[in-house]
Length: 167
Image 1 (cartoon, rainbow, N blue to C red):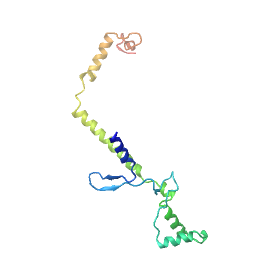
Image 2: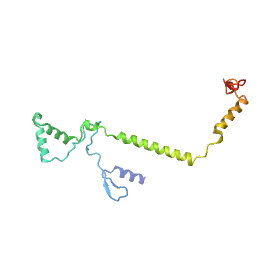
Image 3: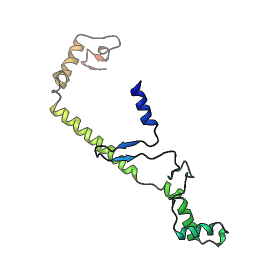
Image 4: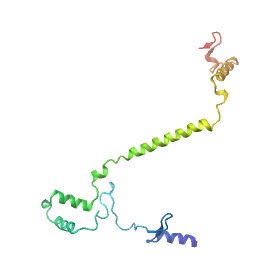
């Protein structure tokens, strides 16, 4: 019971400190209850603007934004947009070419798997049994025909015994 309380207390604390993997440094975990910014197609309006700290020029542009927008130039409108958003929808939807890496990785692992299978075929598995040779199969078919196996609808029904060939 005591151990479970400690574990629960460790996960419920908002200022949890976690040791980095093998480095001995202590890092602060980010507080997920604070509004954060990220560009996502499914959430078009982030919790906070892209730029939190504004320079004097940005502050004067923000004051100018409160006036009529037809007095703003195209560059000023774009600067205002970039203060709020990092990327536009067109920039977010732009293809990244990541599919090439994924397909290349898939082909790499398929090729590697083929090499492993080939190596196993030559060095791990025993040789094929003699019953799989063509000569053995021909003898087996002849013996089955001599024994007249399944003469009504089966194997021997398809053999013409008088002519010595398949029907």
